[in-house]
Length: 440
Image 1 (cartoon, helix red, strand yellow):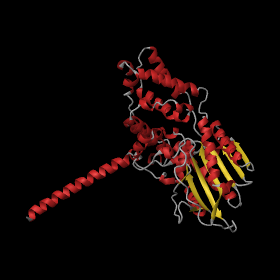
Image 2 (tube, helix red, strand yellow; image 1 turned 45 degrees about the vertical axis):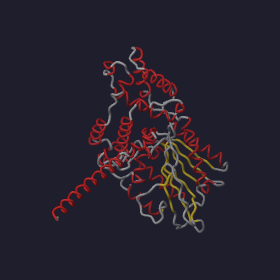
Image 3 (cartoon, one colour; image 1 turned 30 degrees about the vertical axis):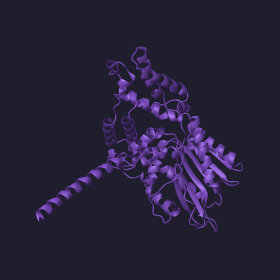
Image 4 (cartoon, rainbow, N blue to C red; image 1 turned 90 degrees about the vertical axis):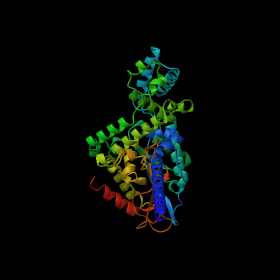
């Protein structure tokens, strides 16, 4: 009897162990593919940095008792734009056009040619320019900023805005400022776009730009992309002759079609067409994986680059701290606004380690499982806002100034201890980040 019980117990233990392993495997699979599910629910997320700005998702935490907001320091990306360069428009268009001239397109291929022609025509002569949606995004961001923090913008106050010298950034700044003036004509606005400010707005001379380009990074990305890129199924979707389609570089062709698919959401054509249906869910997800890995590698805290990418924004962080030092002793300092690019915002978020985006993940295959999702960081119009709070009464001298940071208008966590999250003591924040970049 004892032996029977022992055998039953052993069997039950084995069943329990197997069940546990199965549950863990299921959990890991579900966790490892969070982005796949999110992309399934909203395919536009697969666009990565081409994602049109979604706006904030959550309500803000009320100000701490006895405090009010009084200064905002902002750094953001331009709004939705057309693609940069003509290759993504021209190569798939002329490839399809040539195939059509030879009678090699399927019905779906002919439909796709017509859609690509429309996309190309809309973008002609507008290389990288702001779209109407991009202008709207910045008007709406400015409107929400004023509505959420009216104390900062009430009455006569100063708004100091800077942009990179790129026209889409200048127009993004212009649209935001126009919206602010529309809501408060007493604002004192100064704005500029000059090479003078590029050393912190978009630092092209940082030594860390070259330090990112390591053999280890190139090799890791090459192997990752090879494992996750295969668009051969397009041969049967768009072309009616297997021999003809084998002559094409379908991976390059498919990647460029996906660039077009990604960017339609930022244009007025979003109301009438989509190219996403050309691709399977696996292809779309793998396209996102490759983009996510690329941005993590060169603009994030990757092991293969010794996190060099994030330190390209050291001058920006110094500027934000130095500007705050001059503004926080003023009773009504207003706001400092800066308009730049995703190639700046992405590493800046990682440098700040907002929401743990500054944490190194050894294996590129683990990025999704670890929650490193680029579309949550840098959609078109992405932005980081430092919201500063002062005591409602009393002198500003030696006051305990508080700050919270918004990523895309939602409250973010900082890698700093606090007794009142999402609010942090500015003295702690300032000291932490100055120490982090002291030798950079």
